[in-house]
Image 1 (cartoon, helix red, strand yellow):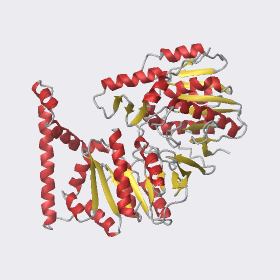
Image 2 (cartoon, helix red, strand yellow):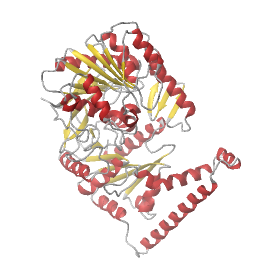
Image 3 (tube, helix red, strand yellow):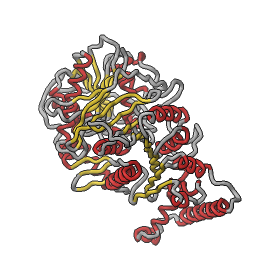
Length: 583
């Protein structure tokens, strides 16, 4: 039966290190199975759905495929600051290969690896005699990967995006510890020979050079790779809502695995393999057992539920976390996983959900993933929330597009609490640009201009003619015009000359329905200025009236990339849940 099965597994040497994976079953009879080894950090997040599409294509073409999260990554147990990161990643890779053979009965395994996943696959290859073929997409060795991070850190003008410290490196919000960096530097030193492993190398299509360390390791292993230039890397390694798997990459990989690529479904159609069964595991979180269950909720949404081992405390809500943009259910910077497990320690259950067309949830027939700001996706969420509230009170958390979905769902279904983080819009028409932040760019630019006025280096650039003064003056003038218009609307609303804005009426409606609403904004996020504009300058009035709560976080960007702001955001959320709902 063609179906997808969530599963948990752990290396025999470390049974407490539970890892998570998805097994895409194919029709019976295949003696070959594929194991997909993802990259790490933000690269893993960008390519998550594309790797799912690849796995589905392989399964439909007759090759069962498994994708998995390394130890301390994604939905697996542990965290990025745990010890022996690289050793743990390798142990989870080897165990995933064993589980794949055990579950499918395949005697031959093809490893399909991407970026630093290639370095991990090569390191583990001598320990996996059933691996008969290897696909390396944009391969990079461990040492080269570390040097690449160091180079980017020197060139980056934004330390929030990439920061190098004595303790490790922060890359786009994801932490790579010093231990992990040292482990990556040591990869590629094993001696082993097996020229019988067929090897396909697909280089990056945006760089002409190859990684000499990877080439040397392949030669040391006696592997003669078939190098093919296939277009697709550039459209794969972009932000999650833009990432897509090219037809060329998919057909090349499927055919290398010994299947007919013409049997795979069109890339424009979501396969939506049925869920074979739910899966559950007990995880060790800071010495306490926590239960996680992967299942489907509502019409057909994939979700991971986290429960205290003894069940949720009476009176606590179910906390529902929605996708931030097209990032799958682990959340930006893995924040949903961290929050869910922290809440379980506080006796509260949570559900991290993939909305329709996002992450591991399918998209309806005739629609194209990913679905952001979608009416169709919103309706499935409303149905899901209505079902969940039959169990207990619910609090919904969303960032950016997730905040938009949470807000509109609460207007159509009873919700007890809302945490809206950095929403960029409250109105969206199908067909609008997904980059809604561009509509609010004037707020961000104005904030940058104001900040520059108190920055000595900015004045030095002005003196040396390095500042576009005319552009800055236009931004300031436009911002002042917006403020004047907002003040005028505020006065007219107070005088009763014009009605309150639709957003204000909706927020007051939610308050009347006993929905506790809390906005959380990065202090310089353009959404904060936008909120005040659509509320006609009456944001503080609504706060004073108890209609909404408002918290701002210093030094944070839109997705809370700096490490300290991630911790502060989680503290703000848990503190508010404690005061408002007894968590």
